[in-house]
Length: 480
Image: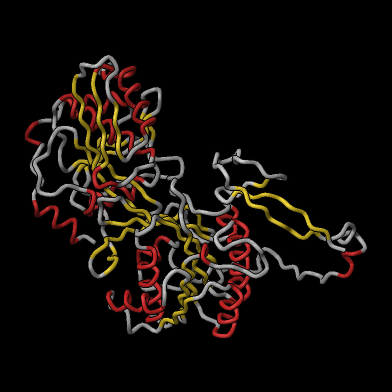
């Protein structure tokens, strides 16, 4: 006879405890433990003798599927880019984001685009009525798309409908609203989320249907529920936005069928989300006279090169402990860079207030941004504007050496496409590049050490600092 084992699961982080406690040791939340009852098989049921009654598995070699995974395009290029080139049949995706960021709007546009391309699409909502979804589709101009709509929360009813209709793409909005009758916990709890996700993923693998799950996020911005759900799905994407910005970033943090950290850029408008084919136009200033402290960084987000402007302000401080403030970059990275500039270049920044900002609200994690940040700091300290047609990229070591950056070709080609004519970058190819092939119309000034950048900024002729004109900015937008 089967026996039952009880455990207590934290509804915030998914940690399991043998007995109830008032506070979860893993996440620190109070009164977040709920009892979970699991039925265990009787002792000896899975012994050696019992295994003889199982069904033998069919084994295949590593060369059974040598072709690249097929892709299904949705008609939304930025969404397809973030997914690695399109949706893979039989895969499961998890999309998270803050409330109101536009997850439902994005997925409704994706569902309509895929349906217009000939795919059979079903959109299941557990949070909205069908009339509300239809109103949004009408406002977005998508009411003519052949998308099947359903409003349900019972997993058994949803699976029965999907097995009958056999769609190509299924959107579940959201996984926290579903409940399975195989679990006794309330909807949205760790037990229900895990059970429903497992059933939907099994359905996707057995029928080659692409399942897209929407997940709520916690106050820290992480997808709510147990982390095991993120390990179960094939791809995890975060839909990000700044409160005061109109653009949205769809960032892939996990993808079994494509590159991770791929980025899709959208702009929210009255007609829904608009794809931004040239994101650099969002993060670069236009029609402004170059000011001290501004440097353009040639970065890489996933496989996409993006140009973004670093802005710095360095001023003498009257405080015993100078202020340090940074937006859009790692504050620990800024502290390290200031220490290297002091120790290796003798700039004496320890007596100055330092403020650093990444224009446009983008957060940069590329280590090659060190050189651009250093150029902005030196430009502000020396009150010397940098040339508006210059790019900067390279990783700064604690010794003061500048290490080569990966994918330098893509960075330089993006700068050439947008009208930049010179770049300051480290010498030599990166470890993963056999040979650097600079863009033919970009002058490459090599910087082997951080002191080379400092001397380069000090020697900038004034006649090389020209105002940014609107024609160059127009070329940047038309380059898309």
